[in-house]
Length: 210
Image (tube, rainbow, N blue to C red; front, side, top):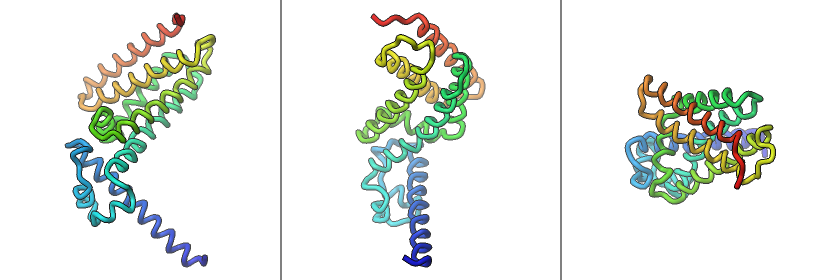
């Protein structure tokens, strides 16, 4: 393959990725006002300015596009929380940083958070399952970080995973609460989230499996 052919293929690949991202962005914008189950691919392609047939070069159907949006929506939050957990800090500092990370994620990606909150129990099974799988993976990452902490010494893997699930569920719930809140309300939500997580942390120190 000569350099001219490689350059042509590179341009085509870049254009393909650009169109794919444009379809995701258009769908996300349209989903601010409706659920995925009611969104048609013609609506999405009309916004992007491509023929409906072009949609199938990127996704098999709207469900597959929804799954891609799940990965995009939760991926950056994984990175932020993983970075917080990787630091050696006191429990209260980890809690404060985690709540701050969630608040920042909502500020940067409100449409993504709204999409996950709506579709977590929505009508498209593949998307529900993708959200559940992403949150489960998130829980596994948190469990690994918790298991490495001294306070988890003697805990079973099952109990550590249960604790991680509590943290993840609480952070997702907090993110949803931030969505439509005013600045003053967000401060109250953040304060409540920190106190509730501290309560979980306090209980953790006295937990004894049955």
